[in-house]
Image (cartoon, rainbow, N blue to C red; front, side, top):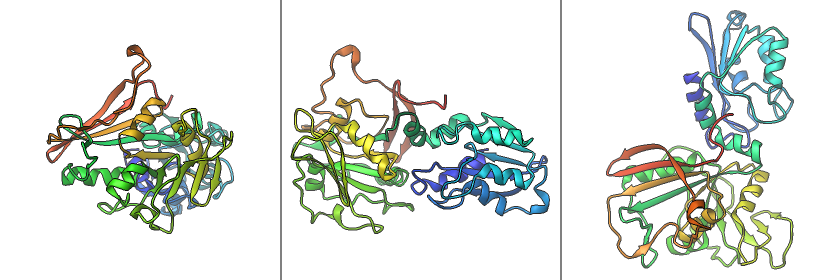
Length: 360
């Protein structure tokens, strides 16, 4: 199962809105016959890839290990459950049930009715961690929101003039690009574009560039900035507000138009509802203090990564400069998920207390 999970991660950034899935076919002795993973949306699923890499004469009675329940419906590819039955496998070990209502136990039922022994739960927590955005979408209809912040020792993201470029070390910067490659989209606000003129790509690591989202309620932004240059044949998408109040979100080629709230701003949860319609199930927010504060104010954050750098900025901006909790008892609480040292920087990952954080 550990091998299946490792294979699944190879599809990060490429499979959405499908999940990342890896599969391994093995004999009782532990000998691996074949393995595969879901390479990209629309491509063959992991189970089929694994079967194709096996000696067909040895498949009868073998076991398959997979991190997510095999599908049982016709989509862009045929049902995987049928392929496993036809291959003559005697046992399928599944880390977790698929939360997609089109599957959700039906694939398991088909296998069991065909006489295949099914075991569920091995590596469930790791499997959920891998596809947490996929799980959240199918449980809530919302995209997963991951906030990434580069922070100084005195809690600042920029100096008093708004300058913030590259005070993290080389290893922390590379890790930030890895996070980008594992998300479907990256979001920043208008001021970040105007001040830093970022490219928002993954040039420091191998991987797919995320879809670039720029938040500007009034839509007043310089289209000559680097972020709007085509990457991977995909244009950046402007998230903006309509001139007149509407109840519906309007999708255009390079723009999504949202209804504005009472203070002429876009509610960030509306963004998380709209993005899955574009196949975006996870978004990495790297905005400035205003954008970060708005996501916190709207209680829209699932995950928070802080890269703490050994530098002092002094007078400057804190990441949630304009956030005002309703009261002390209802202030946001996050739980530490993991911590690592990257050069002289310390990277801490947190999850929102009370958010979807288990496969149950």
